[in-house]
Length: 474
Image 1 (tube, one colour):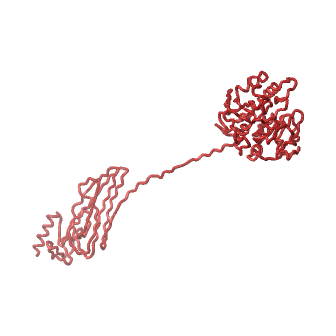
Image 2 (tube, rainbow, N blue to C red):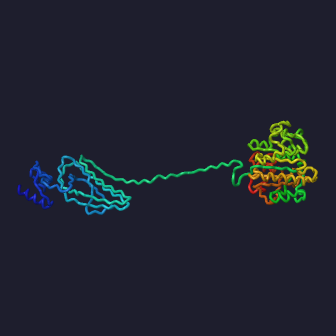
Image 3 (cartoon, rainbow, N blue to C red):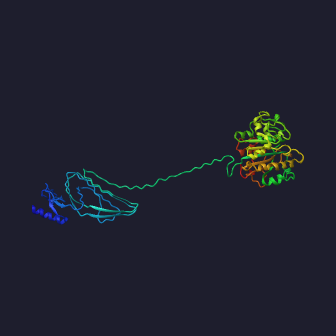
């Protein structure tokens, strides 16, 4: 027996190139896988493996190997020896014999962008097994170039049957994207807009009793023909409403779209109207200011009758009961809105005119009467216009998209044509003229459209507006 053990010891020395000594009780049949019993012991620096003492060389991992499934994966690496991580589960009672080979050095180089993960799992069945296995202890040098994540995980588990799995996860997050929406709101107040703004202020001057043919080309109207028409737009086919005469019913028509059956020039005490359906009520309801500038009145009372050159027939507002409180000369609404023409100049300078301004010259200035020293109604009216119109055209109110309408109340011969001249920063101007048929209903409709008030009053609902005389309307 002693000779056999000595022979086997020499065999181990030649195989492992290491000094060996017998440990255990020396009773061993390695070929049959038998184990030693008892313990003899080994010298310091030696370990008892397979009943023999073996020098402890390098780093030794003692592993009990039983029937198992081992998976080892490695990617993107260049190695001279295998690099692995082994997870082993051992169930007692087990005696393990391991022979350890010389240490091996392995170098792993990872190229961008690569993730290298080594995972190994071993599962043991409940059994008692004696196995000789070799564990390679590896020293690894890893070179990583950004952006690279290299993860090497090694786990050894020594407890009843357990499966251990090591996983490596690399997560790359991008910064969140923020979207900002900007909303801009622009509010345009009346009189402050830019670009294609609506007509803001209206001036209407009403002249008297002439056909257009007696004005157009007349030597008595040099200002109208030589100054105004070349810069204005005008209509060649403007008429008073069919059969509507004399003056008073035409003034009523411009305010209400009808003459209410009136066919005379009687004062308000005879021809007053109880209806509320007329223009200035629509303006008041819409918060829009209005004013009548009547030449020849005092302004201390409501002018309900003729005074001097003031003709009440040419003042349509005093024919409505809701303005005069049924012919009350002290009616506040009448006195507030029906003002002397002499106040217009101050209001133009101070930019305090109303949005709608109805202007009535007195009888010597509106071409109605022949008055000294000129004794020519057309020349008198033309001269007055040459003095007064420039005050309007140079005012801030006109410059701020104002519009000036100069028209005549009625024709002398039939229903016309009569004059309609439009001046405005928004008018076509430059002597533009058209032959579209118009009446006072067209003027009333145009004013309602400019101010955006409804309903269309009387015959204004059926009329063609004056928009063709404008570049931009309203």
